[in-house]
Length: 366
Length: 125
Image (cartoon, rainbow over the protein chains, first blue to last red):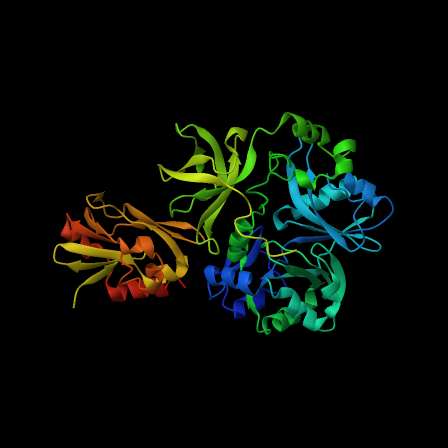
């Protein structure tokens, strides 16, 4: 199937075609969903070795200038001021009601902040940042690709090219020279495994991707495997598990709110969010293990023992590493404890399931 | 040689007397990817031609299985419960999905022959 004219492409599109990818539209981009090996094989390879993902559709934003840290703290509940140079933090853009506008990564560098936002939100995020940051401090980096190399062997692959990665801890970042290209590399990811995300000039992306794919540990993986990997790792997908009507407290992301920020507030929606820390959320994000074999997909209704609705699944499917169906969703607090028996309404029939701790697989990073 | 017919939804049906064995085609299993769960219809279930007969879940998504013909389910493939990937490895063999006793054998004539289905699939790419 050919993509409609309106879809954007990444700098690696031709390479994906050459590799035999099956494409699908995602956030306005024609993205590889899977390669000939298939989602299952790509997923398992990532957990065992190293998988390469093209995530160039994501938004890369540079924030630089006097007052940007204070200004950014108006938009997120994370403690950006305390972030050390060369360290990265996961945080959230909140709206006036305390709902989540997007989730993002912020890295503090010597002279600026490097921000990565979701593809589907990047236009709104960019406008939001520009509106609230000092004039001329926010720049979208449209000329860069983003390549994720994920898995237990990913860092060893990078270390062969530039040993500078060896001293970088998880959630740290460093500038590396990879095959002659200046790359901004963070040790992080969206799979639950150790690994890196590499920001590289668009015109060098294909050469770098080809070099990485030529390493014996590496195979390409598409957005299908990226989704099953992040689900097993208990990581949220914006637009599914997080949205404008869900607060950080409800999403189980209270840990992203800095201690100082909890006391001082000062971010958009702080009143609503901080109030919920005391009053408790209306709903809570939980892990769910169906007891049978049928996967429960997003929007599956969750019911109690008398079939009253108590919530909804927001992400669900088959976990290749778990070897069975896994899901996450929101339930009312009374039903949020691990082990609680619940029902999932799949095609009109109630299937038994239990609330389960997240992540579903042990974390592969330290 | 037994007569195999095909639907535009990529099911095949192989007639063995008054009973049809139904599965999905190699094209369909390839498009779905790794099959992880199959909801097969239970014996006795009444089916209508083009109506829903079951569900195939791949890692990626859930897809309906439609019955090529009207009739009553004789047997669902119990082997798929333990090994749903049979649909991938043997879509026209051990990966069959259900057997149906035809209530209107004339419906078979409306389905595509092997050559017609091949031409249909070639037109999709």
